[in-house]
Length: 278
Image (tube, rainbow, N blue to C red):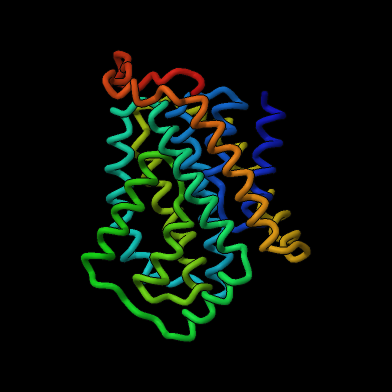
């Protein structure tokens, strides 16, 4: 379904432009339940899409001075180690179990997005900014970066809803710089995670390249439209969609934990064969 695939790519790009995130949350379910790819293939290709689109967004923020390269390098380096480890570990986990974890992350992301869309959350963020930046101890930053990276590699989420608070609370970045810097960290994490899946899943390179290109065009459209709509309403509406999608994925994969006793099937070339749909 090439036309449907590219239409969905445009939809993902527009949502990224409107919301500034959420790409992987949309990409993986659409690859699985609409386009019919397997769980592991969808997670791997979703990382590639999110990596390119996030890098595109990071360049935009960098031009406006909202990317802190040192913070991205420090936090990103630790997160990338966790991402690669998570991606390698994912080879040994059944695809349905990954989708249950993915759905759980969707529900958590929905909570944070709904809360951040409320006016009182905006006021709280302003008060926090007025209080001045505070940096957490190094071990805490290392643990947080490894955890976020591991989640990215394991289930294919960019983790922006976790990285932005981490950069603000743990590294003391202002909110605008945290958002721009998080996009660069997400891009680095996603590329490393995708590399971790290579050789273990089949990738349709032509479709992936075209899908990503259309998504990038969608970002341009969404970014322009974002000036004419309420961010709070968008975030709250999108959070409801995430809850519905997360519950649907949990329902489709409710027997996933029964597969923990069964290792994923591997063909002679060492590629995981997780099935077509969750």
